[in-house]
Amino acid sequence: MPAGEQLPVIPRPVTAERLGGSAFTLAPDARVSVAGPGAGEVAALLVAELASDCRRDLAIVHEPPAYGDIAIVIAPDETPDDERAEGYSLSITAEGVRIGAATAAGAFWGVQTLRQLVPVECASDPLTIEPLSIRDHPRYAYRGAMLDVARHFFAPDDVKRFIDAIVLLKVNHLHLHLTDDQGWRIHIESWPNLTAHGASTGSDGSDGGFYTQDEFRDLVAYAAERHVTIVPELDMPGHTNAALASYPELNASGVAPELYTGAKVGFSTLLVDDDTTDRFIDDVVREVAALTPGPYLHIGGDECLSTSADDFLRFIARASAIVAAHGKTPAGWHEMGKSAELPDGTVGQYWDFVTPRGSAADETLSFVRQGGSIIMSPADVAYLDIVYEEGDRLGQDWADGPTGIRESFVWDPARIVPGLGDAHILGVEAPVWTETLATIEDVEEMVFPRLAAVAEVAWSPAPADTEPVESERDFDDFAPRLAALGAHWAAGGTNFRRVPEISWRESVRV
Ligand code: TNX
Image: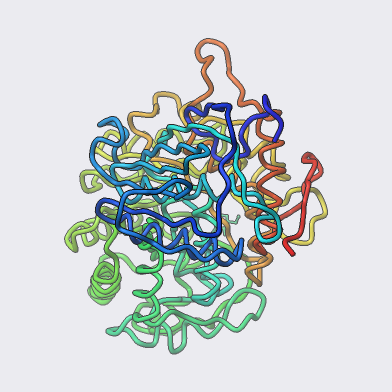
């Protein structure tokens, strides 16, 4: 890479400096030297990547690095105190590579930066990297992607592939939209018909499917090894046709509706003030909470067009209290902010536009008034199922579509809801809804490259020039870095959309 060009890393690191001098070259006898708690596990993931991407076989050693080694050091004083949770440093010189962090998570994000700096041709050419020094930490603690496994089901191996792809962008939460009108995707021991019947369909007549509790535990563990927290969503009281179809007693009429495979929203609702429904909520929340080591359990609350306003308020107060009673922090879409009875700390997820409409801003601020924080997912820039261009084969266009790569990049989470700044923004999440997406390749085509843009919004510092001038992120700085990332995606087999705004320079790994 010519001097003067920015480092090909996304999200852009907080500080990155070229050092001059000789490049680092990975010699055949290079090792990964580890020190500190968790360094061995992080090293094992790096070694696996270097084996599959570059066909190098590195030993992991618990001894100080020798000339030309890659060192991973985890110790409290490796980062400043306020960057401890996920910060890292990365230095690359002829003497070796050194990643320093206070936590295994920080070291793991340092490894992701290193992976982007490793030349795509590393299997056939010498693996050299120019000397540099990076210090980095995230702007937001929560950087998320959401995968809708309810409309189309995605098998555990697809979800693992998705996790592998998102961690390269330092995304650390995977929100799984597990239930909707079209299917219920997680087995519940106390209500087995939810999956026996309610998982048998999906959008467009697709086959459906569900995760057994063992499969779900395995996914949670796979994610955790990669420093990703799974956020399970059980959407209620709307988006519940699959549950209503599985148990007649959840319906006012006592008659179960047919399973649904279309794309309408807002036609289903659970009952309110109903003992059976209360027992249902308590059981499903208890079982899913027990499978979830992470702090959040998402209960949806969106688009409840068939629930009266009063019923909605009583339902949300009840359901969010049940989540809290099972030891989890409730999370929900911003409509849940209509309730003034949310448990302390409830997390709201904003999905209106970058210019809020209707009551969306007020409902969002309601979470903050009740001691909670906000995840920003503005649909017109961060909904990755929205078409890139008019006439696309995949995707929907309701959210002010199309949404090009530039739109996904040029926005700021703290400039959307008046009165909502970084102090109350937990982070940023990009959802991908799957009404039109039948395969993981379809999902990837919608997610990449736009998730790279949203991930940079979530991780990298806000643009420097702020009030009163509306600042813009520098798309011209981002574009060549994205082109470089595209080469990694192509080599690693991640499908992505070759959007015309970027001069992709792909090279295929031999
Ligand atoms: C809105 S926004 C939904 C989903 C749809 C999506 C399609 C929100 C919380 N819900 O039910 O799948 O639009 O883009």
